[in-house]
Length: 377
Image 1 (cartoon, rainbow, N blue to C red):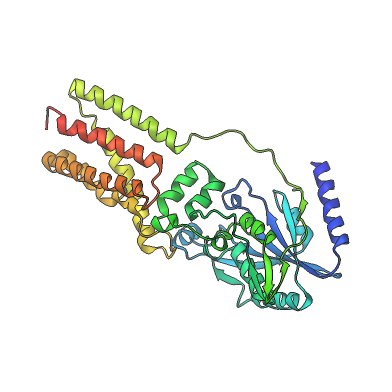
Image 2: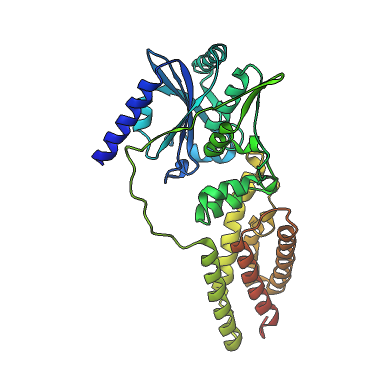
């Protein structure tokens, strides 16, 4: 730990000494382990021979009233704050890339003026949006406004992906990604441009490295030097323990339900607790999805075709199971039709459907087949 601290301090001192002239730098933090660190972070540093200021658009607090609810509804406000270079670097738990942005004096003046205007108390708060207005996009937009000309990004080798795919690159096949996929609707599967993908700090860093400032017939690089890497002072050994994936979990559920359903068919037992749990799970998730779809201002959550399986009406099946068995059979058939439509949606590419959801659909199909072929109504 002490060795890493010394290396980091020497790297910081060397950078500040070698670059004492007035300049602007993009600070890009590698992804970390916490939920809000998974995608990395961006900040902007203004440096001259007297002082340095790091402008940070990513300040928030979990202690704010109803933070999670507001975040889900797209009504979370973040703050622009500032710090000095050393404090910012020493607070990071991952490596930080420092990319010098080649702006002339006039452009630096414009950028400095915009930052100071944003830092005013009446301007510091902004309505955060994960995909379109965050710590990275704010910096990108400021740089584009400050240059004398137009920032042109090299998109020759760029392969368009969707918002959902870009998120999965950082999250992987985890329960967090499963939850994100539940809330993201069909718009999240639309292919996006390189400019839109710059909501991710690493993507913005890479795009800046190949960008040019173009004015008339002249062009100059936005970043002409290779980034300087500052090792983390607080790096911790990563845990190698991998939790059970959603795909494996739903495959296991399907296997268990199939076994009990087969035994129930042989013994003429319904094991209705299985159906109660299935309908309760889908109904509960349905309440959340419907709430987010209809009340959130996030542009990527509606329409969400997962409402074909996750919806509050699933709770209706539970009383029908005991009080109107004929109605329950009709509902079970209706549910299978809805699930078939969801499969069509997924296979047609209208919206991404997790493998775990397909396995859940098969689980429902197993139970419905048993219901329609049971000896007792």
